[in-house]
Image 1 (cartoon, one colour):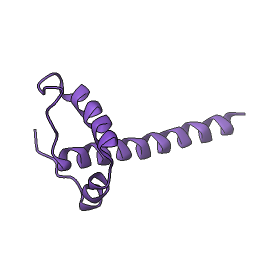
Image 2 (tube, one colour):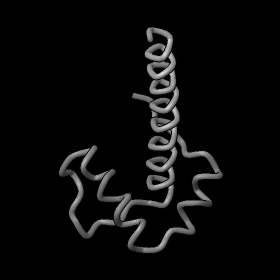
Image 3 (cartoon, one colour):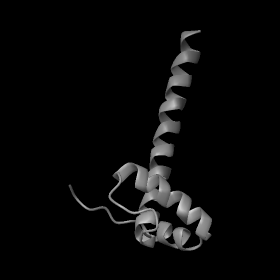
Image 4 (cartoon, one colour):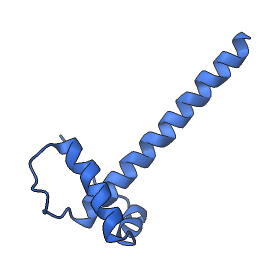
Amino acid sequence: MTEQIANEEYIKRASKLSRAQAEYISYRLRSKIGRGFEDNEQFPIEEIALQLQLEEEALVEWRQRFAEVKENASKQH
């Protein structure tokens, strides 16, 4: 598996997050990678930035697919 690197824009956005927001994103990241991390262990800002980037990319992809489904449904009626 290749290691991904977060875009600089997302690193800046991640560094501006409040502690609570960063912890929330860390929780989502922790749930994806399993129980390998202790609850009090901090994720580096780059990991949080990468999580933000991946979630935003997934959302964009989902919106595109949803628009296609909606368009196809409207063509059928």
